[in-house]
Length: 325
Image (spheres, helix red, strand yellow):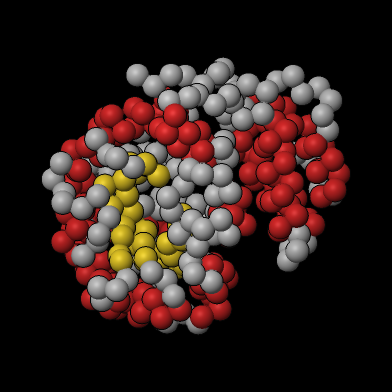
């Protein structure tokens, strides 16, 4: 979630109960030990106890391919206070893959093992090492081998995005393949990919057999999705769809946090980026996006978000929340 899930977003998404932990945007590792300022920029929570303001733990993520460079940077992150370090083998971005990062390593399980093992040895037992993978690069034939390579290298948990790199984010997500992996591993496996609503959550859990799921784009599309899931698990009650006024309030709070350090034009761009995620699953967000997408002045944009006229379209594009089977 590079360029999307920064510290302010983590703060806003965790203000209601729902998330057990969060992950930073990846810190790109090439061939040198990065200075502390890079880590503090990606993870301001290092200044505290590695938790969001509401107390949700934060995991610091590294992305790279050179085991030695990953090891020294993991040592750096641990020395600064990171208690959990996650290794990204799932990023499908062409630029990242072209520079031998993210999902590109899934073409050779030995490289996954080398990276995880180097980091695990560097940080010792006091710092947990976790990993995220996809089902492969261009095919799924090495999915289990890559998963076992991460486990054998010392990963204590594995998140699996239920598609290959070449499948990108195109539906469907193959949650049943995560189940095939989970049955062969001794560490916790977390299901990820295409979880947009409560019904998706239950299907992902059922088909994968995983106890936990990870939300990415789904949490931006509906900022209350994790809370909705947690509330249903605790009470059996279905919360109503997230109304536009709540979505607008979250976007406004996001703007207020961002504009303390960023220019109005940049904050406007970030608001549109988040709104673009929302609009794919919400009719009112789509209407607002189309009406506001050419506005470049922040206060005008915020006024348009919070205008309560013509707000009848407050249901999701799929209607009310479906009932899990």
